[in-house]
Image (tube, rainbow, N blue to C red; front, side, top):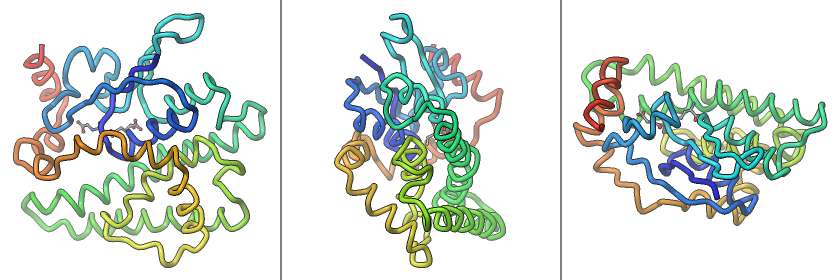
Length: 241
Ligand SMILES: N[C@@H](CCC(=O)N[C@@H](CS)C(=O)NCC(=O)O)C(=O)O
């Protein structure tokens, strides 16, 4: 059995989708980010970056327990464990890895910044227009990269793979970022096909009941999420002991 440390956000959905796609049995351990569960010492022992998702596989390689943090690493782990959606032949494997790394190093962080400046920064004083525009443009550029590639391929790396599962949740959020997909016909086709996969729908629905938008915008939550420093994490972890 796999324990999934989870909150219903794009990074969490990548893993719930993969677990559903591969019919892997799992047990959800909710991580309430607005309440600071990510600073609990027992969580930091698994995920030292105080971010979810993370997993613990009680029957890892050689039957031993293993934990994995970082969504890209978790997708690779599950792909290797199940033998699904992550081809192991050299050329196909690196096609998938190109797009997986593109997502975890580019699309995810840039979309995360769009989300921050569109949805959260207005709670803080100052003019955020330069940063908002900068990240919206970069998100748009990255959507354009996908659209171009998807002109000649059904999925990012050829066949449906962990690379698509990584990218999809960050496209799913486009409306919340004040963006539309009108200029991207190929991306739209890809998006609609993936959105209608039953396992994707199940993965995205996981933990819907934990979403509490007003709690996310409370003063305490905002400070918890966006006021983090090395020192504040140490203090929060001490308090959670
Ligand atoms: N690079 C990480 C990013 C994970 C991440 O940013 N998770 C967010 C939620 S989407 C989180 O746990 N935030 C907690 C916090 O900011 O304290 C991954 O891909 O797993």
